[in-house]
Image 1 (cartoon, rainbow over the protein chains, first blue to last red):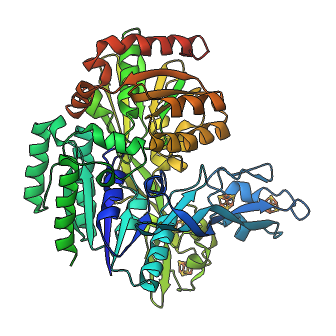
Image 2: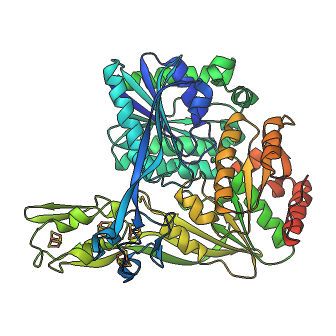
Image 3: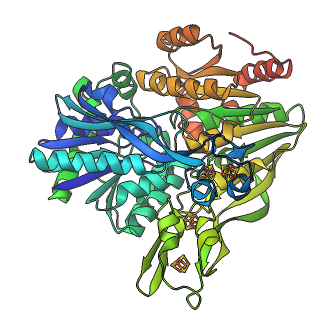
Length: 285
Length: 283
Ligand code: SF4
Ligand code: SF4
Ligand code: SF4
Ligand code: SF4
């Protein structure tokens, strides 16, 4: 089984659109949406949810008034300002459990905390594992790990050869959770200064985790000069850049109709994505 | 006043809106721009500040004194974040996982644990015309960014207009940024993706009890989806910025929207006037 993850650093580079199109082109795969901050892949793939399960974050402290002697030790020890006047401010509580362990009266309980939901769905392009995180929850990468684990189980059970993962945005913890044990990373970038900046960080990260990378430049013609610098930088790093995708309204039209762009229309963008997939496929075997 | 600029997902044009707002405000007086998107700060790519100061931001991390430690395993058992592992003759610390809760130190029976400082990133400040510019930059591979966002926000000067460029999404780092803002601007695109993420962002600001308004970016006139939603939620659409290839090209080259299209400045000025007057202007 092989795993491909699509990353972009900053959002808005077209990562999900491209991922949705790869979902159409690739055969015998499981899809995983790890963009848990803004899970959008399902909008393109019209999933039918088959099963859902709660996702637990770290537990939250709660003080039992009947047992508490108001010694204030817990408030003194809590480094996250989550205890005031023998009350836990749940929003601040990071679940470290220090108050629980320290309380001389065993007045602190750690209550399970549901942080989100994990779904397994059926789509016409294959099974999709996705999740949604509650608002104001920690995006620390645990949900990403849970989505990946589930996707691997499904791939094994259904004898799928490939997992395509729409990765989380940014370059932080969720991305790091996404990179371990991956076979190939596709970095989707655009020729903006921030796109280039983020691409460099993504490639550093891929290097750091020893994962092979391929770069795709989206909307390359917005700034041909920057496109050339991206290609030059990738050459120095020995990272292939098989295609340049042009700026094309068709991408937004497809998004407005909630369809993967290769399904929606034709033209240079679609040809580019098809060529990109051919290249990725040869690198995945 | 603190104004946060946020969006449910990245790439909606949040930074170009925040930078444009700062530029227009700077024509009238001093303004601060705090880039709280510490994982991928990019406001400086549009505002080009001249850097003046750099300060390292550190978090506590445990250090084990092997001579005092008896490898009892208590610290690893306490640590809710699996940042410690005790082997028969060694204690391993995984600094990126440590939240600095201090539990291991407090509970170690041998007093074998002390704390050291570990750099997770830096806060840089500088000046771009009349704009005081601040951003945080998280080191590659670091997982915990909220202490850094806190350090950026400490730079907010009371009495001045402070514009916060929030990280994308609706999780902890965004909450950390947006909490205690006086107003939150939500930037969205008129697509089903945009709407989906806007919904989450609105849920977040409502939960925090912060008044908000929507800017529709890359509008092609077909904004029904967003307009209906804003009506249902009783949130004003502050204004629309049209889909504009020149602006996209300008952004690619490091130019904010109002620099490419000075004609858009009155939209931002109106918004600032409205915020000043304590009311949001509804288009
Ligand atoms: S440490 Fe225990 S007894 Fe003391 S204030 Fe906290 S909950 Fe109450
Ligand atoms: S679990 Fe940790 S963060 Fe939560 S209240 Fe207790 S000491 Fe504070
Ligand atoms: S709790 Fe203290 S003595 Fe026990 S293993 Fe940890 S550092 Fe060593
Ligand atoms: S300070 Fe807290 S999070 Fe860090 S290693 Fe010690 S117990 Fe774990």
